[in-house]
Image 1 (cartoon, helix red, strand yellow):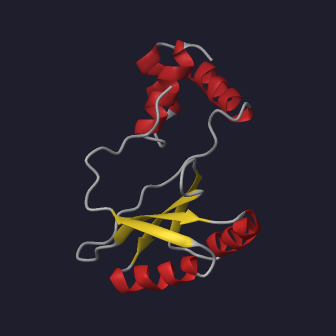
Image 2: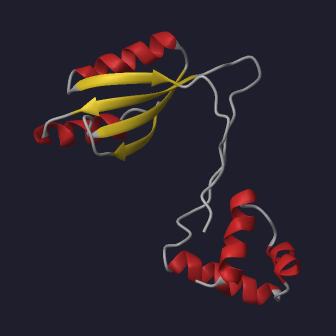
Length: 142
């Protein structure tokens, strides 16, 4: 991966729907050359996909939180089953330290968060931090 690939990735991270011709213009390459580079980045697994960032409709707020889980090795499959069937679970990280996993959740409200916590507490101990705000939220850069 060279500097042109990094520039392409930065542009796609800002706007995954940016037209190839706009990328080509920005980095002084032809559109076919940019398309070829993007295809190679996808084939190499550097670009793993494209996504839409959703915001709740006006007037609807969500409660987002990080739930840290301390699990024994025999509960890992239970956690994966729970996560796969839980639409409020957004991301799961395997971590070092006292807790073995951290799960980011986005719930309709505090009652929904409490209900989800009860599910997690059936398989391990938890520690929860409610997200108050996100002062920095940017895609990773190369």
